[in-house]
Image 1: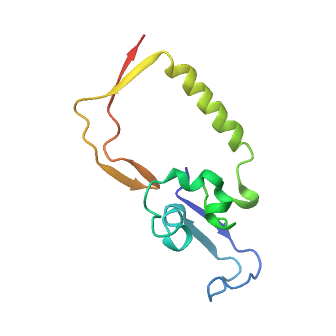
Image 2: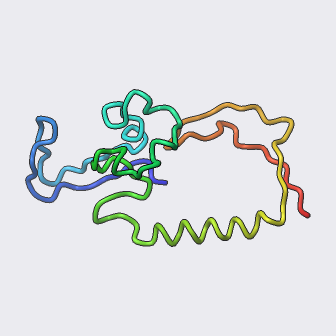
Length: 129
């Protein structure tokens, strides 16, 4: 997943919250900050609540382009749906031959770099059947 979305302003544009970017300026938008912005997502923006999306992304974001898992606009990945289905299918076919469990040495500590993840990795023990 990209850490930020960068675009170059190619022509004069309308003001964004009181300021107008100059032509030729590159604007970077840190995706992690957008995904945790309480103005966009509400007071529980930093909490894991997948039920928010039960009625779709557009309902949660009030139609604003603020959920960017694969980019957005004209530069969005055209194969994102196929790629996700293909990856899930391949992983399912591989993992059906294994069982796994957390290692006794695993200690939970989360880290936030572009997304929430285990700080020291997820130590797993795989058993092939």
